[in-house]
Image (cartoon, rainbow, N blue to C red; front, side, top):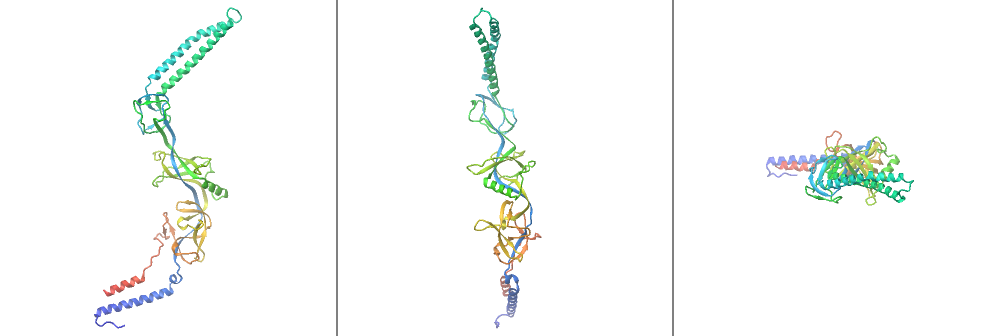
Length: 425
């Protein structure tokens, strides 16, 4: 190729250098293409982890609602006008604390009347009793008739009955007088109220005066599907894991996740389990009990819970990122054969444990599971495996934590273009 003699000598020299570099790069690229195993065999690099059995705590994740340990709706037992409201809404009250005071005068008057009736009946008793006894002693004579004797005895018994009725009336009046002071039936936090001084109350009214809820400790009602119940029972019978319910001395532990993802600091225990399945939702309820010293949990709050249901001493955990589903809905994963080829297997997943699946079938100790580079492989393809690690967030990293195993390749044509541009300048 002839150079244009009209070009300055330094431009001509620059072009010659550029063409020489391009020729060298081309030769190197051809040599690499002919000799590089990656280009010739097209063996992509993939990341894998080696599966090992390990102790696994099996948990059941379910939703639940917070329920107060005890709830008491305050209603009046007698009618009357409120003279005083003693408590402040939202405060803590103890059993027996005075909440409302009604006008006691009507009840004091009823008690006085009942006590007067009792005194009257009691005053008549000695006379009628003596008369009945005297007539009974004259039973052998003909001084009085049989009718008189029976009347005297009946009057005596009637007077005793009047006294008993008067005593009951006195007790009722005393109870009603006590109901004029409305007290807390349980310990807890009392809510808001619309009742204040001057409010007229009626006995047994539908609207409650206030509600007291005991919040420490507190219940969480958890719902679980009946299908999961049957699946776990079958796994127990097959010996897939050891049940946590079998140890009566150590009740299964329950942990909570609050709205927003915060983990509740206290651990709960199972309190009770329903022995029936709901016909409408096909679920059953498990009740857990939690300490609530700071009143973090409030009735009606929605939470997520994890129940410890058992343990597997030799369980296999497979990262969820490595598991997919085939057209039949079966779980599948890619593994490396002994000659570094890809094979796809159907595996049996039991439950999720964090970001991993607990697998009960289809894997064995020492299996090399593909966890990165899925887009580069297909069953039967030969690959270049690189052992990697997964951090707590499921991110693939090399064992020395130097970074991701993603491959970065430099584009040779791009480098040549840059050199040519620089030479022309």
